[in-house]
Image (cartoon, rainbow, N blue to C red):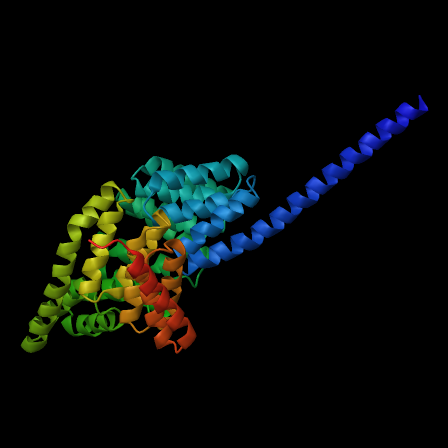
Length: 391
């Protein structure tokens, strides 16, 4: 009997020891998951979607019962216009943590983008009930009302957002738009000016203010504001169009013609992009459509837009070789050789038998004065070219 008790005691000791070790491992995983999650959020804030997606998935694998990695994945999917995937990820987060206000708020945004306004309102209001200071939920609910032309209730929500966060520019900007839609242009000007005071480089507020001055036929003020827009964003097509009209109204014919030519140049690019944009509306994962857009952007010098599309392609398919090549070429054309070297290195790791990757690695190594690295890369490229089958 004594021996049996000792055996039972030993079994229990082993069991609790294993349980304790499992708990420690679980706690370690949670700590590590949180670190990775913080890294993922920083990548997301910096618009590095590929790195963010990888980190969110790592955090999810380490802590599958944590809601936040699913929220992160939902944010990435929303950025990629994968609305249904985003909804699925956010709902998974709520299945783990039903009172997670940010997931309710993001679901409101996703359903608003799908124009399912009743569902959007439900989730926004739930987010607010869980966190009365969630300014994005008030903003989202306001925009949801605007989409239904319910301007009075929209303004209530925007003003509540201001009450929660008085120094945030977005509610004032949205109030300006709402007043403009209602025809109260003087009030719209006041709201846009306040938004600009809070964030002096917000292009959209300057643009809307310029358009409002155009509607008021105050062309000198419209010119001053729209010139600021094109200074901040030279390829703002609509700003060039309105600036051309404003110059013409005050008799500055030569400047009007210059702005018209710029507008037409940007419009031609948009027209070339349009068929592929339509394809992406039907299938956001159409890599060939995105790559075609990248080639157009590169040809016309729209390098930031080209880079953004490459990042999106790699977040859809991490081994899509044309995206790596385009990223290398885009950075080289801007003489950003450190970045080009990074993507060339990634290309050689993804496709180690591709001579082109080593050629780019050699070229960027030369520019960075890494002689040994350049020689090694070029030798590898030559070796792969010699081994490749001759056609």
